Image 1 (cartoon, one colour):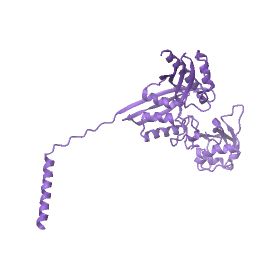
Image 2 (cartoon, rainbow, N blue to C red):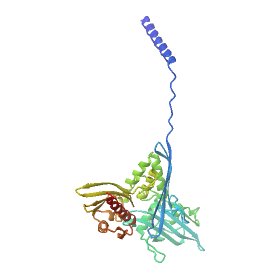
Image 3 (cartoon, rainbow, N blue to C red):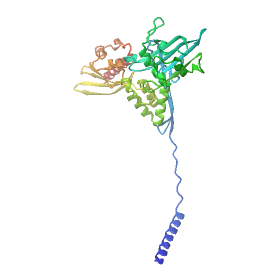
Image 4 (cartoon, helix red, strand yellow):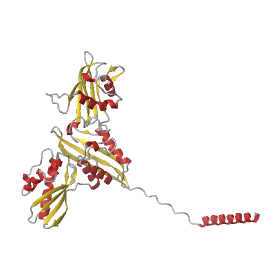
Amino acid sequence: MKNKIISILSVSALVLGLSACSTENKDPKPEIEVKEPAVETFAAEYEMKGTTSSGKPKNDTFIFEGKTEDGIITELNFDIIRNKGSEGEYSKKDIMGYLMNISDAAVEKTADGYKLTTLTAYGYDPAYGEGALAQFMVSASCDNLTDTTTFKELNFRDDALSSPDNAVSVAMDKALLAYGYLAKDGGIELNEETLVKDILSMHGLYADGSYQEGSKRISFAGYHGGRSYGEQMAAIEAYILENKMTLEDVYEMFKTTNQASEPIEERDTISGATITFVGDFQRMVYLAIHGELFEGVVTHTTTDGNTKVEVVTQGYGGEMETHVTFDAEGKITAINVRDAQETENVGGVLTAENSDFINALIAGQDDLSKVDAVSGATVTSNAMIKAVELAVEYYKGL
């Protein structure tokens, strides 16, 4: 037994010795080459011109710039500048720039005490109104502000519907709904007897047992949880970076989620951001990828003497694919818009199958300059007119 143990130890020692010799005789391991990530920068600036809801001209410049490493976005600046280059320029990232889930308050000192000049609540709730009117813009005021002033003593008006000569009042149930989001943000259960000083303390305009003269804007969590427009944009930035998205990933997201054609209640793909991703978002990223936007004929097919020309133009909701069908004599017999993401009841009315506008395009094909763009849906209608013009030009060259 003793000899067996010695034999085993001897063999083990021999193996270890051979291993050691073998290691000593091997060539040194080659150094592992560390490959540096491919770093690239990108930048896009896209200007969208249009009109505000009140009919005034506006322009929004979409900024999308940053850096990628091996295709993954690692640095990002996403901003929308209203009226870039003019005196009224401002960033929609700035809480002072855009009215969404924000509240302004202003208190003035008077000879007899204090006056509430304004207390606003701007946001959205489908219970507030139908369609566009679901976006509320309510302001309140009070000429004699005291420590015992209650919510029901305020005078409420609808800023969206009122004019300098005609103040449209707001019913108490709707006022409670609109200001309920603001109050909830401050841990206040809002009712008619809620003290106004408690709400103004959120703005810093009631402190140390007294009202404070001044004004302040704050944001609050709205119907979907998103706060101010700028904070929602910051949430989109964070989402892109946290999910290690490529530019192509972002383009696909802007093209397929939170579309204007979807019910607003369902636009919550990104936590904290319910912004509608209309075509401007797509075009911004497309420019970052390709350096220019695409409009033109994609392909054509001919069946039984009829030729279908597929055209891409830039609609309000992004790329618009239009199929224009010509008969054997070269006359347009059908126009179909495929998967258009145009706003329901606006551009969507034009792109619908056999719409009045499509019939007008077919009827006016001999002189498309006489087909007028549709007011309120100019981007959509102009994109459709251009699609037919491109199709006609292409067909003539076949």
